[in-house]
Image 1 (cartoon, rainbow, N blue to C red):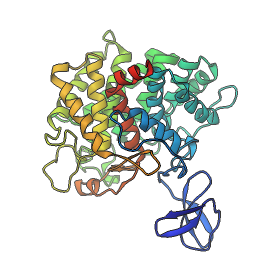
Image 2 (cartoon, rainbow, N blue to C red):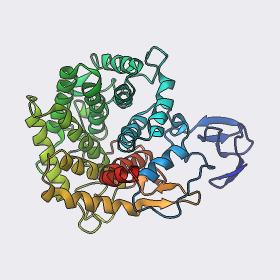
Image 3 (cartoon, rainbow, N blue to C red):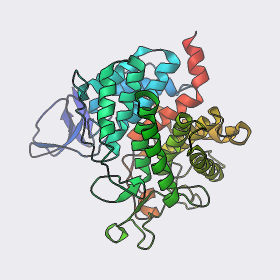
Image 4 (cartoon, rainbow, N blue to C red):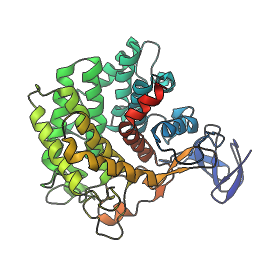
Length: 423
């Protein structure tokens, strides 16, 4: 089979070539190739199996299920979707697939998760995934918790508890975990990664009080440092600003409100509040943070498109643009708050609906009948200024954007998904 990659015409499945360019291997991983030496390109998102097909001709009215089908068709073995075989994005996707399993009863969603996770434990449930030296690698632990709940197989509980044990010695500053265990930098992204795992642990596995106390501590500390008066949250802070390129030398804060970064935090809060219940001693404090954040999200929604900008509070800058990843996350957070009676429907229903309607513009059906997601950026990290955020290259099917769209689509289409199941 012949595959066109960039400007080079290369042979599908070829392991060595004599030209300089890019090649995809049998697992659809794109690699850089120079002088017959193949090295995997770091932090790339594979476009998946080029032979995968689905029957869609145009964007469906309800696109959550077709998007999930596209994900699974594109990556039949989810280990080979990204630059790492075990990452936070896998767990992020599985949260959505578990919801589809609950709504539809279709075991294909559960089996897809099982097929992936069983590669990273042995028969007894001993964890064999990536090292737990950064918060990202804790995220997929949430899937072991949920899989134990859905299958009742003890090996998944064993894996989850082994991951939980690694939390005990993980470093923090002022109550918030470091994003990586080598430097005291606290990212808002990491609040989601670790606390999503702890929330599911508390919900399904055990050690509820411990897990919720740690999760609340991190959420509150992040808000203390990052949440502004308008409810929005900055991307990160550090205790070593003199060593950190993106940090203000006096405050230790990063400069901008990145939509996807704040979006991670926005996804977590209603999930945590649901599991805490109002009787928890820190419930009110966490809910206050969520309420202020929701007000900020509503305030900065773009009136014309219904979406949110890459740098949320600078929509008047001509270089800024609507970010589908952050928009999807905010849609989910607001609708989840409505569903849990955390937010008043009359105040926020239109916020979620307008954001959801905005997302349709970022969906395209490709020639193979799969849904492609446009306009997202892949693997954005902390940037030193506005310009660097808004000039990050966009790619097709950026991993965080695809999964964010899936979360948003499922929650906004849940009644339709259930009704179609019952036909």
